[in-house]
Length: 365
Ligand code: KG4
Ligand code: ZN
Image 1 (cartoon, protein in one colour):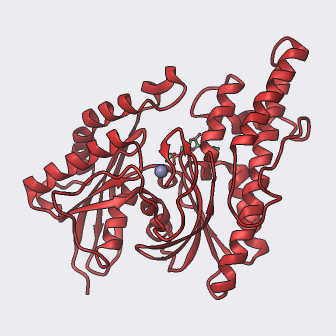
Image 2 (cartoon, helix red, strand yellow):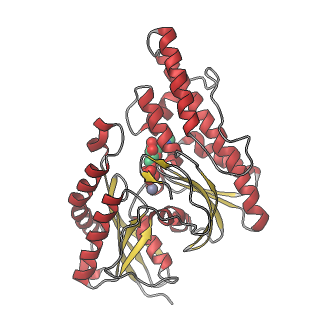
Image 3 (cartoon, rainbow, N blue to C red):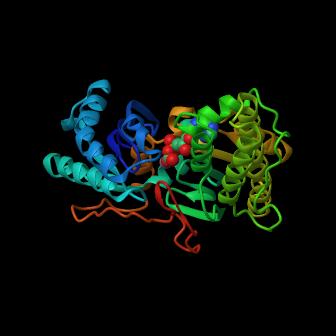
């Protein structure tokens, strides 16, 4: 029987500083006692994207505060923490270093073992924390910095079936919002504008659908939106409200079509080898998009597959997923020591070739 375990998790790989406390009881059940996330959107708003130096400095300032808040909300103290988990890659290096240094300090001061966690593993293991999904399952990880199809075979055994060869979808949503003058983060703004738009008014490409496999591309779609916007402005002397809504709707429809078709292909490949476990899970900030969520649910139904989409707060960056990944991985590899270093690139599937390209949030993993 498992022992009760309290784990403090830290996350600082992009533009959210987060800390969380999880407890696994002696029956093996895990509870999120607290999950604190301090976003940095306002600090980066004037720059049109995340500025790594500003992000790193803000993480260094906020980590202690987040840890204190997380411990207080969990009604516990550092003395009761049995392990410290921290995102040690991939991500913006300055932010990851801030988190790793903070975690090392806490580990050295308390004697609690230290676990360096892959941020992508945190996202990919989230359906086990929220819905108790058993291995194996297919995961579509779709965020501002990442887009990949993974088969989760175990706590540290992931097989990548495909991914973006250039930008991540969230990054494309953010860029489209900037192009049409909507506020950041772009995903929610574009989704809202799309509600009153006609997706058929401005035809946009569906990149890579003509190529076999489940790799994706979003950079050509962004360029097509830019060209269409310029044409509308030239013809109208500005961007009329309705044209803006139509462009957002057209863009979102293209993303929905691409993600749906590539998910069908990934499910096909996955089910060939795992016919008795039809499960599709989604995680990452873009999974908050209702049109995308419901399209993926429709695809799952067509395959008679279970569809699992964690609550939005656990789809986007958070530290509960990092603490949970540490609990999952304790059985498969030992704790790290104070030589733990930050890794800007850290593919989950070490056997697949590295993905091409790099996005606003750093090198693709
Ligand atoms: O997972 P996340 O919080 O951070 C990482 O990128 O790791 O995802 C943030 C991304 C942003 O690009 C944001 O625009 C996008 O997720 N996003 C959305 C929506 N909400 C957030 N994209 C489309 N529709 C949404 N409703
Ligand atoms: Zn993330």
